[in-house]
Length: 610
Image (cartoon, rainbow, N blue to C red; front, side, top):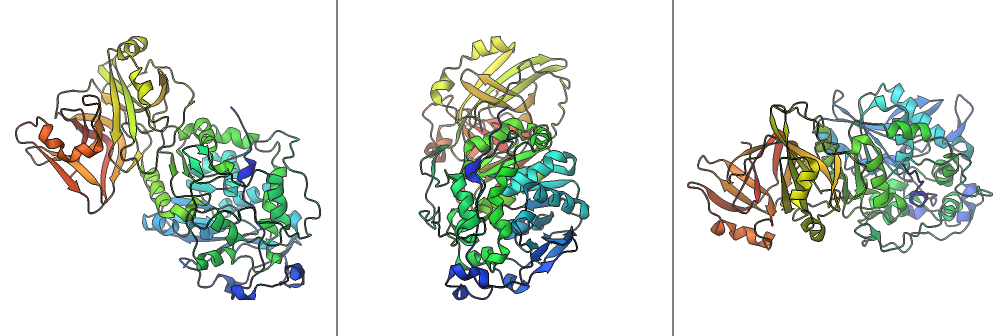
């Protein structure tokens, strides 16, 4: 197991002084910022702090929520809540320099789906109280306050979503208290484990002396351009020197939250939303917590081993949803893969890298993320027992994951392949379906190098089918899939292609054309409006929608050929082939069993549940 701290990804923040009323009120002489007076309060434990005035948070766009508070050690921890009080709980934890406003597009989607949603502000951020002394902020202090927050509100069976510094804090809490959490989801984050004695950066000298430092993201356009070619970084992130980052955060005189959010999101932020991100910080007196965050890296050495042990033993559902255009280390494929490989509950889950999403992916793709979470929460990840071969133990040896390719956000026309060995067991036969999705894109040279007869003999299978290459036709997939994820955890390598057990079929599949097979999986396929779909309709009027086309029989078949495919199929009497342009999204859901047929070319179709 390899642990490495991804320094270059942690986002830093110190903010320009501005008025709660108008950006025109920015103090022109930044070096006189200390002359600005804020009302300093003292907690019951003697901590001096400031409280951002309520008027700073008035009329924020898309933010109708009344704030609530939990008092911890004499300081208010702020949060918003939405959705039914008896709904399953979703807890959202932000990073830095953002606050719970980052979740403004996710909260209503989750709440409307029946979830009780809570978004918390860290100490020193958002509407939480803000100690003025830098020494009042610590990594363990933030984690402890999150633990107390959960306990004070009596939260249990939590579906956790964390990002950025929220992941460093939230994943520590989850690793130490895994029993509190029903599921964990991570966006562009990690739990770093540093050896004792490690000091990632030099201590910052004279932290309260401001300096005129250049904004590191000044060359990032408001509308981002791609930083990656697949998993290869092709544009420098500007964050290679983390020590310079930490100094800028602590001492830079011209840094504010909105500039960071603007630079590290894919889409250009409207002016009123930029102002909302700046709202918690009406002067430098309110910035101590935001300024201190990056320097907390020096507090991580030797303290997360126990938390990582808990996280790397977590078997409940664990999902990664990545912004694919994050040029820092937290955006790297390796960071996402490190969690997928090491957390048992990540096996077989629909991990993804979202296009048109930067480091602050909640801002770029909040609705998409919320919908993916809803599907994730709604899926029963327990494997449904087979009618026969109930105690079947596959002879294929499980192995560690070594290949990783996050599927694209839009799966349509994405290539994959399946290896399907058939084994004899007590009570009959069982077919296992191993698929390449999320491991590789089924490179044709490696696929055609597979020898089915040799693989069958090596595995001790009675039969084996090489089912590919194939191409998906749905746009999105959640839950398990033929070529996706079902909660099965077995991983195996065939030739040069690593794959994962994606489905099981009771018995030996009937390869008769236009004959239903029952496939054990729980899936939802989404075909987006505006796309063309291809249907087979049997004499009883039952419809089957093509889920993938095959190049097994016709190696030259392309997606462009499907519109007229009906003219070349040998359809049984009474059957018809139909094409349709969707005017609204179409969802095909299988709860435990999918009913699948194949045509003459081994294109596969799933039955529409009427």
